[in-house]
Amino acid sequence: MEFPHVSHALGVVHPICLERGANAEVWDEQGQRYIDFIAGIGVLNLGHGHPRVLAAIQAQLSKLTHSAFNALPHRGYLDLAQALDEFVPVSYPLSCMLTNSGAEATENALKLARAHTGRTAVIAFDDAFHGRTLAALNLGGKVAPYKQRLGSLPGPVHHLPFPGPDSGVDAATALAALERLFAVEVDAEEVAAIIVEPVQGDGGFRRLCPEFARQLQARCQALGILLIFDEIQSGFGRTGARFAFSQLEVEPDLLLLGKSMAAGLPLAAVAGRETVMNALPRGGLGGTYSGNALACAAALAVIAEMSDANLARWSQAIESRVLAHHREWQASGRYPMVGALTGIGAMRGIMLEDTPNASGAEHLSALLAAARARGLLLMPSGRKRNVLRLLPPLTSEPEILDEGLARLGEALATLRA
Image 1: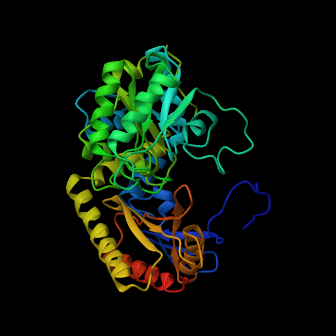
Image 2: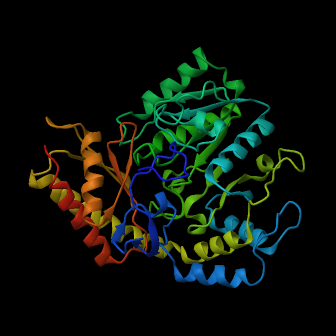
Image 3: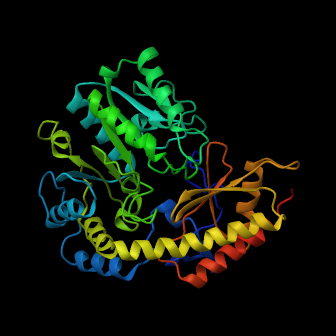
């Protein structure tokens, strides 16, 4: 769909225009109701218009809407930095820089990694996604459409196969690829950082192998390489924990945060060890809008709402329903295109397989349209765009979740095997 005065380079998944939302439901300009399993592509873990977040924003609105922190600090930024130190489960004192977006967090992490190590090379993974700005884009593990017509991108960047139960790549294979990289393409002493998503987002909700994560951390520590975890999509409760890296029993040197951090207001962060975060000279980090007062107020409300008990309860409610429907769809034999379930907790993907009449990508494209016609909004992912990613708000009402999954089953029934 194309909109007047908007660049045609912006790809739009659903040809509708939203007017309002309430938790897991949205309405378009014609008053049509939809169940939202996209949630701003993982931004709205607390749903549309969460009361606690709205109250925090409204209270802040009457006091201060913005101050550029690097010119005039404000209390919201300082309180959020302290709250993140308490909320992020690492063993060291956390230092942070707030940014406007995940891509901006990625860019600043690269600056810090270079400054701290004196090195320039970075290692990323196949099917990764770390943002759309030029340096972040080169970390991505897929060309089309993100890297097309752009020429050379900032580097050097090298890629490894992503190991895990959803990718078909084991830890030994990925570690062997890492050693080959050091022997053939780049000296380990030139590598500043290795960046990886504990659960890939755009790559199809694929989990990182825990054994590989542990060995990767040990290798990085031995070689003086920083380990960066990108939790922009998997963080803030999506996997059933505050952050997915805690489920790997590994902690990063730098952590990228974003999306659901401020429940829909633009806010992200790069956070990590003080020695790394302080590697640049004073004034080397900053941004006019980063750490906006309204966004900080929203983020503080998000953190207050995301107790471990709430996260476990919300994730289990979504996970159990998705697993039950997926088992039913596969067991029925009526949906041969329904493949494996990927991901963990409430971050789940469904692979659409090739059948005689259509490829998995064609099935998913048809499924998005069929579901939308039934009042359900869905989002694709994966290198081949054949993985359906399910991102209902964690706070979705049980009856809305059931209604949405029932509509998904109805849409699947329209696909031609």
